[in-house]
Image 1 (spheres, rainbow, N blue to C red):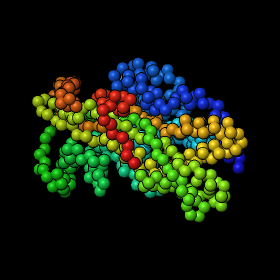
Image 2: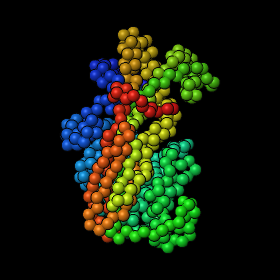
Image 3: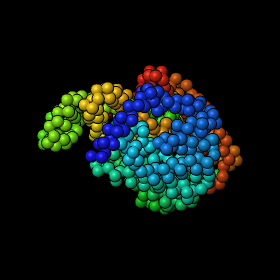
Image 4: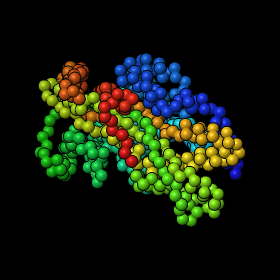
Length: 483
C-alpha cells in the first residue's frame, strides 16, 4: 500500500506546479522547438547548432537522446563525419543502456509520458546506425560501415523479439541490406556483397512486401552484375528470368558513384484523443470500450464494490495518444544526368511510411497503459475529493491539463531515401541532379567527382524543403495517423 500512499502524495505535489503546466499548455514538442527546425530546413546549420547548444531543456536527461540525434545530424550535414559519429555513438549507448526510472514511471502515471526519458521509436534506433554506417563510408572506413549496417537489422530482430505477437510490419530493413552490400563491395568483398543484395531483394519482394516500395532497379542491376562477376551462372540465369532481362556486361574502369538523395523531412508528432466508456464486465472486471475503434480493455477490480462503482461512475475517459503528421515532400521525383546519360533515382526507404505503420503497430500494446494512467488519475480525484473538496477540484483541473501524449520524436530524419549508382569517366565528372517539384518545375544542383579506377565513391545529398505539416503551420492538407 506504500505505492498508493506515495502516489497520492505525488499528486498533492503536482497540484502546486500548475503554473508550469499552463506555461507549456497544449504545445507539441515540435511547436516548442520550431526555431531549430526552421533553421535546419533553411540550411542555417551553424545557428541551429548554437541554438541547440544553448537550450538547457533539450539537454536534460529526459530529452538528451533527441539532442544527440539532432547534433549528430547537423554535424553530418556539415560534413564533419567523425564529430557526427561522436554524437551518434553516445546516442547508441543511451539506447543500449536505457533503463526505466521508476520515479519517472510513477510520475508519468499521474501526469504524462513526457516526464520520462525519451524512448525512441524502433525505426529511430535503426536510423542511428544508418547515419553511423554512412559516416564511415564517407570516411572510407568500410569495415566499420559494414558493422553498423549489420546492426540495423540486428536491432530490429532484438526489438521484435520483445513483442509477444511479433506482428510488426517493420521486422527487417531492406535498405540496410543494400547499404551493407555497398559497404562490402567498397571493401572488395564481392561475395558478401552479393549475399547482402540478395537479402535486400528478398525483403522487398517478401510475402508482405516492404512498405509498398518495389525492389529498386539499381538493386536488380547489382544482383545481375555481382552474379556475373562471381561466376554464379545459376543465380545469374535465375535473376535474368526473374527480371525479364538479358544481362549485358558493362565495364566501369574508372569506378562508380553511389548517389544518395534524402528527400524532405520526416513526420512530426502531435496528439489525438480517444473516448472510452466504462461498462460492467464479468468476473470482477470493468471494461473500457471504444466502439469506433472496435477495441476494449478489461481491468480486474476484484470483489471491491466501491472500486467497481467508482470506475463505472467515471463513465467516459479521454485518453491522449500520439499521432504523426506528415510533412509532405516538395519534390516528387529526381534523376541524375552524368556524361550525357539520364539515371532515374530509385526510392529505397520510406521513413515517413515506416513511422506511420510502426506507430499503428504499437497502438494496442500501449493503449492499456494509457487507460491505467487515466484510471489512476480519476481514482486520485475521488480520493482527494473525499479528503478535501478543494484538493479534489484542483486534482480534476490538474489531470485535465496534464493528460497529454508524448509528442517527442526525431524530427530531422528524411521523409524518404533514393539512390542510384553511375559509372564514372576518367578525370572530372559533372554530376547533374534534377528535382521535380510540386509546382511541376525542375530545380537543379551540380557536383564534381573525379573518377578513381576500381573505387566506389559515395555522395549524399539532402533536399530539406518540405510542405507545411499542420494547420498551425499553414498546411492545406496533411496525412495523419489512422488507428
